[in-house]
Structures are given as C-alpha cells and as structure tokens.
Length: 180
Image (cartoon, rainbow, N blue to C red; front, side, top):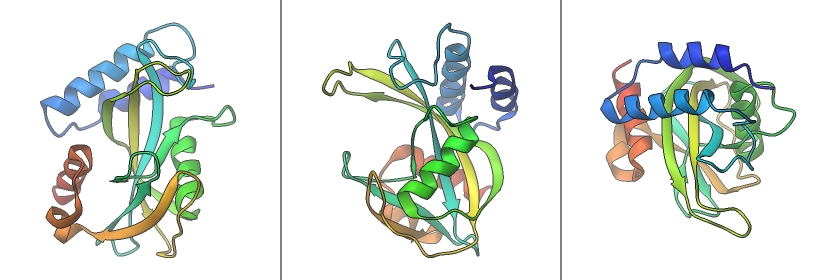
C-alpha cells in the first residue's frame, strides 16, 4: 500500500525543471487526494500512478534506455505498480530489473522527475493518464539485456543526447542531469 503522505512530501520537495514539470507535479498531487487505489492499473479516471527510473552508468557518462516493445521508442525503464510493490521506489527498482537485468542500483535522487502523459485505449482499458514518478539511480554494472516490455536495453552517452533523445520528457531529464 502506498504511503500517500510520504509521497506527497517527497513530491513537494522535488526541484522541477520548468513550468510543464511543475504542472505535472501539481496533477500528481491532485491525484493523491482522490479516493481509491490510485496506484492500481485499473484506476482509469483520470488515471493512475506509474514508476520509472533514469539509470546512469557507473561513471555517470551514459543513460540507460530500453526500446519499448509497444511504443517502438527508446525510453527509461518503468511501468505499472504490482500489488507487492510497497512504494513507487520499489516499483521503479523492480521495473529496471525486469526490463534490463540490472539489480545493483544506488538511488541518487528520488523522486527526480515527474511526468503525466496520455495513454490511448487498448482492449478493455479506456484512454487514461499515467502519472509517472521517476527516480534517478546509478548502476554498479554496465551489463544489461532487454526484458519483459523491452526489445533491447542500451547505454546512450549523455554528451551526445541530441543524436538519440527524441522523447521530450527524456530530454528534460538529460537537461536536469547536466545541471546537477
């Protein structure tokens, strides 16, 4: 079960990069005030929490991304909370392990970033929002593999982000990394 008060405090302390991320943080805080299990993947109105991770290489020169099988894009590892996840941080760690094989992670900043994005309807699930809380880790190993929702997992050099980063929220994270 998520500790809403603890999550609220950590989000209020988050240093947002810009007005857009500030709006995302406000939306997540508003979601936390709603009744029901806002961490459940079946909480569709307006949506539910998800957790993801920006993972730096051991020397902090590269960012780990996965090639998402459903979206066909390079994104940070992440996804839905499972019933056994005690926190968003635990969910982010589990997702990194499932999608990349990395288990030995050092938490650097948590939460590091927040994003809200629309998910189109699919099967029985109506269109809804993902309220994604993102954590920053440093890996202790560079050995990765694609996993459950990932076709591939790869390290991308931060200094060449203009050549590989196409998702605006990933670019925002890269800018935040450059300013830390």
